Image (tube, rainbow over the protein chains, first blue to last red):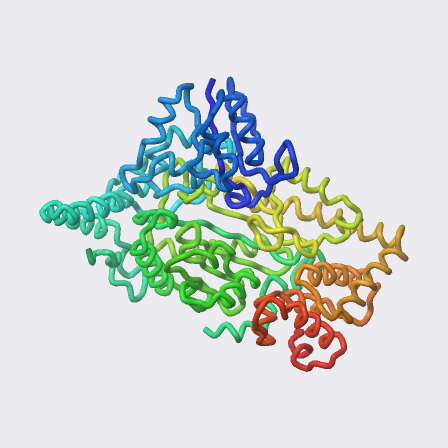
Length: 218
Length: 358
């Protein structure tokens, strides 16, 4: 059985779809997607009913029940279960995984419902795929595409990810500076500049454009 | 741009012109876009946000998007001005309440608005009065194409345009119409209609979008999914359902007149009476009553009021607008001021209130 849970995401925020709990009149703030033997089932519950539901299907969750008085469930026992496979260890491992570029963990994404950077779609592709399939009923973009050519990492299958690498380099540069490793910082800066130059919009495409991306001031 | 100059106009969504504008207030298309080289807004540092804001502001200013744009630095606006922009549907509530560097570029007609550092780095919006989804879509394509010449949008060949929330990934498009459906509300058919819309993956929201309550019988219908279909298909999905909803609402209005003429006449007359005489009145009640009066005028039950007047009051009685028009401060006197403004408007006693109705 494959089970995916996307918890504690207020749909009113996410897609404007204010929903009622399936068990009572309170707003549903937990939207749980159960994938079982190829069948998708959605469950929409308020905080209290979600707690009962999750405890039933996960076994007792002392942490979750003890936080019942708390107004916010963030960081409480309720935000824990996202199941891929069955064991708590699997969950812990998945939650710890983080993006090489922006550093967001999968756990943070699940809690906030917002991704950290474009590279997350590549880093967490396997985890996001069933979620996206469930939201959209599709996993392939068929709409418009940017008309500009991709200058480096020219392999079209990477899209703009070559440029997104800057996010990781910028982070690395900051770290290097804080440990006073100026050699590494300089290398990162040069790499950022090289990528920026390769990706700069064509000159003449816009009036008054210097051609630089305006970020080379590191 | 001075925001005060906007108080003299009614804004695009209440202009009340365009096809089917007795029911369809406005048509809107928005695109969510992100720069490839910065973290999404919720993960961005203060510096990232400032860099993103500057880059987008400068690059957008460097290309012709078909309209002259004014840029408003939302990060440095007073709260009342941010609320004012929300009421005019030029920025979202989320954008108004956010932190850090952010702004919005708008054109004088208030049809085009480009929000920088909302949930995504860039949210492009085109809004047209009445039913004109294809017009709004044609316009937004031009804006998107121009900007795309000078920035690198985050894009993945399989997932499409990459967005901070997976609910927008792919096309990043949200196609919506704002409908005025008082008769479906009165005849208690509205829930049934919404349930059937849900079944075909369309979302229903209140006046101010995400999470807002339906006020004054105004509802936004929009596409729920953004991936796996082309933009044209998604525009068409919403466009296809609007005539059906218009038909339902018209039939419900006809039913009301035919079967319950006395009753509905009484209801709209009472609503009109309260608006003209109340001494204190909330925003919600005002919207509700204006909604009923609007229907009454369209059904020919109230003779001496123009639809454009009602549309104008719908925006001018909202808290930030009222405050700007009347210079009122503090919540407590808001309701009293609103009632006074309405009385003066209908009595014709206040030239500033009357002159405004264009």
